[in-house]
Every structure is written in C-alpha cells, then in structure tokens.
Image 1 (tube, rainbow over the protein chains, first blue to last red):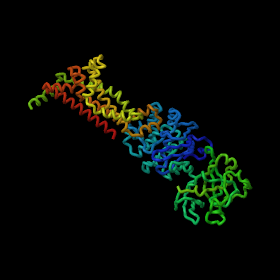
Image 2 (tube, rainbow over the protein chains, first blue to last red):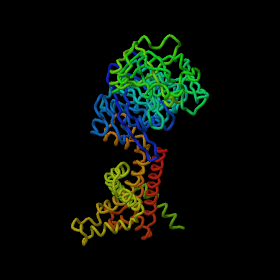
Image 3 (cartoon, chains in turn brown, cyan):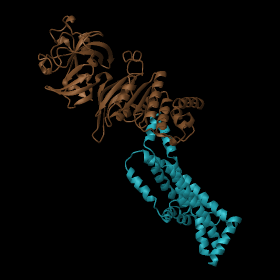
Length: 396
Length: 230
C-alpha cells in the first residue's frame, strides 16, 4: 500500500520496536519474539495459522497484555511497565481492532464517537468527524440505529470506523476480515487502502489468509508456534518439493533448485530463513551445493543488522544432483562465511565472480550484522554468493 | 363468604375515596422503601463493582457472605437492629426505635446485600471485551469504569428494582423497628397484618391490592430490564 520509495525503512527509525518479547500461557503456549521493528507508514501482515501467536502479539503491541518479558519502545521510549499515563498516551496513538469487535450498547454514532469523547473533543468537532467517517465506511444511514442491530460485517466496519476516527498513528487489526463474508472483507480492505493513501499510518494486521497477507502488506511477518519465522515476502517462494537420490530437493519457480531437510513433498510455499543465509564475496566459493550467485539490489538498516536484497541466479555448475563435482554434502564444500577477513584468499579480483546473465532467479533477503557488513565492504550492485543451509529451506 | 365480598366492596370504595388514611400508609411505605434503596445503592453499587473488577484476599469469602445474606430472615435483621437501638442498646441514646429512621436502617440492611450481589452478577455478566475495547480507544481508568457501568446499566437497575420489591413487601423488620404507629410508621404490610387481626378486611384488602400491584410492577420491570442483557 505504501509507496516503496518514500515509505521505505531506510530513512527513519522504527515507530514501534519490540525487544525480547516473551509471554507464556498456562496451556504451554509460549510467545517469543526477539526483535520486531515497525516503520511508520508501512503496512505489515502477520501471517500464521490459528494458535500461532498473532493475537497475543497484537494484544501485547496494544498494551492489553503485558508481556512477561521484554519491552516495547514507541518512538524510542519504553511504554510497557513504566507509568500508566505513558501507557495511555501510547494507546491514544496505537489502537487495536479486535477480531470479534465489541460495540457498546448505544447507537452506531455513539460507538464511533466514543474514542473522541474519551479524548475530551468538543461536540461539534466530534459530530463532523464521526459523520465523515460513517460516510467513508458506508454506515451513515445507520448512525442512529442501536449498534447491536448491525450485522456481523456492518459491526466490523463500525469497529473499523471507531478506530480510524481517532486518527491513530498505528492501527493494529486482528484478523479484520476473518469473521465477515467476502464482500465485506473486500470493503474493509479497500477502506484500509484508501485510508493509507490519504494519511501516513502504520498498519499491522494479522491474517491466516496467505493471499491477503501478500495483497495488502508491504511486508509479511510469518509466525509459527509463537515465533516470528521470517520477515519480508521476498523469502517465500512457490515451489515443488521432490525426492532425489540425495534426499529432498526443492524446485523453486524461477529455475532455482535447492536441497532441503523438509519432510514435506509436492507443491508448497517455501520459506528460506534469512538468518541462515551466509554471504561471501567472489571468488570464494565454490562447489558447494545450495550456493547461489547474486547481485545486491538494496540495503537497509534494521536495528543492529543490515538487511540486503540479493537477486540470485542458480549456479550453472552446481545444481544439486547434476554435477558430480559439486559435492552435494554442504559440509564437503568450503566453509562460506560472511566475514571475509578471516579468509586468506578473500578480496581477489571481482571479475572472477559468477556470471549473472544466466537465468532469472529469485530475490533473497539476507540479514548481516553491521560489523560483518562493514568488513565485507558490500555495496548495492556488488556480486555476492549466498550459501543456504539445507535446514534453512522449509515448507511453509 | 359474605365478609369477604363486603371487604372487597369496602376496599374498592377506600381506594377511590382515600379514606382511613390509605394513601398515608402507602406514602410511609414508599418513603421508607425509597430511602432505604437509595442508601443501599450508595453502598451496594460500588461494593458490587469492586467485587466484580478487583482481585483481593478474602474476595471469595466476602462473596459467599453476601450471597448468604440474600436469604437473611427479615425478623433476624429486625432483631439485630432492635438490639442496637433499643433503650438498653449501644445506640439507645439516639432514640431511634419506633421511628421511620429505624425502619430505614433495617430495610437498608435488608436491601444492601441484594443490591451488591445483583450488581456483582451484572458486572460479571457483561462482555469481557468492554474493558479492553475502552482501553484501545484511549479511555482513562475512570472512563473505562464509566463505560463498564454504562454497559451494565440494565443489570444494575434490575438489582435496584429487585431490592425495592423485597423491601416494600417486607413485614418483620418494619413491625419490630417501626412499631406500626398510625400516621408515622404504619406501612402497607404492617397495616394489613393489624387490620386482618382486627377483622377490618376492607382496608387490608385495599392495601393488599396496592401492594400486589407494586410487587407485580417491580417484578415486571425487573424482568424487562434483565431482558436487555440477553
């Protein structure tokens, strides 16, 4: 939704940062999110199945659930714990729309007005803003009806209007379309898109619909069993997992074949953990399997790490199962490391690097420690090798 | 049967003419009941709210005591207050016995557990998302409480109405503490008891009709209010 050029994460500090967030339930469920940075003006989708921890994470971000460990920073200031007034100021800028919205026992108008009344806004201003918002969500004609008489989809829109009318900096939405029919779901998506076009707002929505996540969001955060698996749609690919003589291989759309440890077979969405991709500068590398050559196309700062986009192409000489020299066991190949300073033969002529005109490949996102990034001296446009552990290639 | 029929005829006549101080008696009843309900509400509504929303040690015990007190016989309340305010009691110097004030004290004690216990269940019955929704919309602690009260309003009103119904129809404490003094502490219930003993069925039936209508009215109102919570 947001313009990728103006709303990119490079230029600003994150509006919300979650650090070492941990929360446990008696049922044994354990949420653990090590680092989460949300940037102003971007739209994020938290994608995961039921019970993956999406709601818990959103409730923590809304300060409805206090995490057992960790802290939340808003514009650099911690907001959880500390003093309740700071928490309230935060809640007046960061609001949550629950999956099953609760409407107060009053009219639709009064419901939408409630957040503004809490803020002590003048009556005339409330009327103007609420009516404008009701027009926007198509509920103006229901303004003076009892809120309890609305249908599920209408109630969801009223809840969205009630959240949006307070003009939040961050809007959290828990499965906003899960409990409404397709038509209402589309309506809610377009209201969100419209709002984001008009105003720079950070949106974080959870969804279990894969297509919705990628349709709406600038960035997709994947959760499974209480953990953030991956961020960025870049490292999720469509592909096919097949058995080969040397174990499972993954054929990704785009012509890249990788070895994997996964037990799944057949067509699947493949996730490659960006934490487990190692970069090195040419010409180090070699004949290891699961090593892709690529060009760095973007670099951005993400906390204490650098996030790189690498447009990778499959190595012509090392496709698994084809080249007898390739050394299919990753361990048999030379160790790839993101810190070339340790390698005596690093820094040789770049011209010996890979050919990049071979095939269209895939865009990988790789996280590199700031220190390593500086040591390697990588800049946008450089050619690199990306070595991917078989265990990092998983079925989504 | 003759006396019953003539009693009903007399009752109808009294209701229309207001003779024999029918409406004075009704007035005393209503005054005592409304005063007691106001006092019980001032104490019972916050108590019910706190019991429903706060967690503290001994909470279960307090709730259990409250629910037990719902079944307290009115004559026991009468006995307790009587022992406090009779001439030899610790509050005897205030000379409250056989005054409307004494009755109000007794009826307040009767109404208080009803108001508190029903308010507690009214707050427990409301949706758990109310508080969270108010918080996400930026409400302060006080605004959140106000929102919760507003959402539970029909249950709270039902609590008050139920207590009123019990107090207005009660006879034990009113008799013991008020003394059934004509024009001062004679209520509908104590008057009915007295007039029946005297064989004056006309006044007793007239008051009985009013009392019955009041109790019916309170009950209908109670169920109507409770219906909003479904």
